[in-house]
Amino acid sequence: MAYELIIVGGGKMGAALAEGLLRAERVAPSGLLIVENAREQREALAARLAGVTIVAGLELEHVGPHSGVILCVKPDHAEAAARVAGACGATRLLSVVAGLATARIEAVMPGPVAVVRAMPNTPVLVGRGASAIAGGAHVTSADLEWAEGVLGAVGSVVRVTERNLDAVTGLSGPMPAYLYLVVEALIEAGVHQGLSREVSRQLVVDSFAGSAELLARSGESPEELRAQVTSPGGTTAAGLRVLESRAVRAAFLDAVAAAAERSRQLGR
Ligand SMILES: NC(=O)c1ccc[n+]([C@@H]2O[C@H](COP(=O)([O-])OP(=O)(O)OC[C@H]3O[C@@H](n4cnc5c(N)ncnc54)[C@H](OP(=O)(O)O)[C@@H]3O)[C@@H](O)[C@H]2O)c1
Image 1 (cartoon, protein in one colour):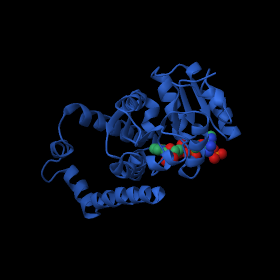
Image 2 (cartoon, protein in one colour; image 1 turned 120 degrees about the horizontal axis):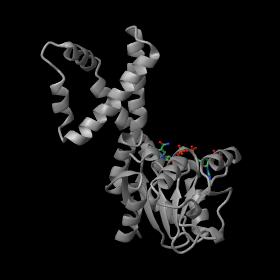
Image 3 (cartoon, helix red, strand yellow; image 1 turned 120 degrees about the vertical axis):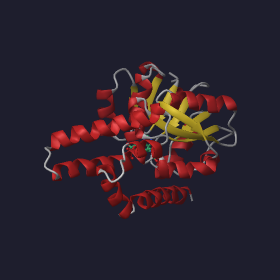
Image 4 (tube, helix red, strand yellow; image 1 turned 135 degrees about the vertical axis):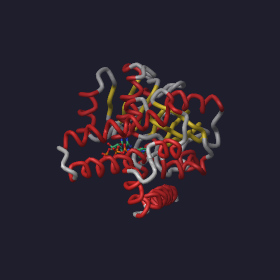
């Protein structure tokens, strides 16, 4: 049987995409195939995703003329997995593999295959991902629209040039991790000031989610919103002065640069 969507690699990102796409009803469970070579992970996915077919290896019969393959394996495994997809007849492939150029995927295909490269992030799990996409040599506007439809079901999508995907890979791909580190540190800071861990966690997590919502909805810049809560000589100003003196801003610049450079290295 041929499937509408085939996710190759059901790890963290593959599973998040599968759950997000099912929740958004972008695909029915019966139209989704997950190819995952780790037995334990297959069992975990089967327990979470009722009605979805989960197999250890992709076969010819799984791929039809309208099937879209989403490549979600680690960079080291990506070319081998793409080669199998090509050999099974895949004609449209969306790769979320960090750093892997569309040309490298195209090179292992038996013919001209539409390859769209994307960088999503894990909030796709709750329908709030932020993805960027770029098309390879054989991609048409219909292929880009298809990729936008898939990732748009689980968040927002922007189109960029492929060269800019390394910058995206340094910025929004790992951004949940950057922000969770900040959240973790702030919860700890509340505990250091005498709050219970539960109270500190609730205050930090709700402030984090609320601030993000305010930023997204208000249309105001982060600078404006920050200025609104920083009275001259006040408590927020005292806290911000410490963050600036410890070069938090520069640390983020360097973190994004290091992650983008790692993406370029992976692609070489
Ligand atoms: N996690 C993120 O936040 C994130 C964000 C954006 C993009 N990405 C990209 O998403 C990709 C996957 O990342 P991840 O964090 O989800 O990795 P992961 O948790 O290690 O998942 C990859 C899974 O694919 C399996 N696998 C490997 N080769 C396979 C094959 N040929 N056929 C079927 N399954 C295969 C692996 O099994 P084994 O362990 O047995 O090899 C593993 O379970 C990476 O290329 C990464 O750059 C991840």
